[in-house]
Length: 216
Length: 216
Image (cartoon, rainbow over all chains, first blue to last red; front, side):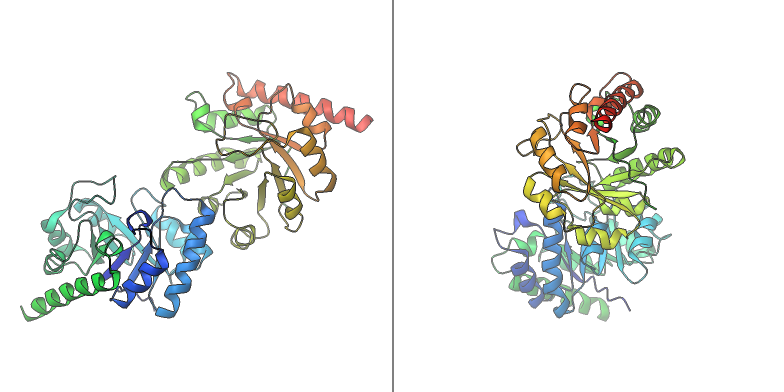
């Protein structure tokens, strides 16, 4: 059985980590409540990406937290990661699924309502709604989906949804209240002085929003 | 049985191809005598790399010429390429072999005599000696091995050898005379007005040098 709890999903970024290692950030973040970790690397050699992935796999396996690799299926296979996250410019989903196998998690970024509708034809394990708000982390972003976009997609998608882009403790609750299953964050954890505490605070926001929802 | 004739090995480069497609260049080059083709792409999305690889595979399969993918094992698997070429900063050889399987070609770039000695411990299908001369094609090059380096490596390696870097009709024969099994070229084919004729001329140089060698 695949374990795919997208509620508090950490996406790594070395440049935003204030010089601290992925291992440090990830261990602290998991202590604080992170449920899934995605290793995202650009402009790095395959060898270095492989090494980082291997190190994170070693940290996360005993913690029982899935490691997802962004884009690079070769790295995912090489370290036997728990899954792969693909964007619209990455490997086509069908090819990725065939090579990864049915037991692995595959997440897909959708940037528009239309892409979210198309994703209903695929047996992805979750869709990433990207970006919900504008952000400085990614440079190739589309128009933000906004809370309205999240709400609309949540109304028709058959997949788990995780929103990403500009999410912090101020707006995390709104994401859940509008129907997403989880939030994915970069700087709201990796750039914080105390990544464990940062994760805890985000988790508190999610729990509070879920309580309100379940009582509504 | 793996078909791995490295004698005239074309490495693609879109930026040096004078605006012409890989398909055009490759078809012409194979007509002229190219025995193997490596698709090398940097700064391209996984999706676009995959598409290019799929197109080249379609061109090369009926011509019975192996398609080798540079660095990206995911692309190699996705298009069922004939092989993978790895450099010293790419996937470790053992991991690549395990994922590619025994039936696929794996080539490894070596940039020093020491790396060539280390490669004797691996069951790679060929080693690329890189660079033999200085070149404008790659920016991250080490000191050229020179003809002396080729000669020394050829004296002890157990692998097929293909030299790359600054090779053209003026020096192709010298590479063979110094013991390499083949030459790999980029601009000496892709940047030429007539890639077929360019390949033919290189092949003539190789044949002539091999004749001289066999008579010596």
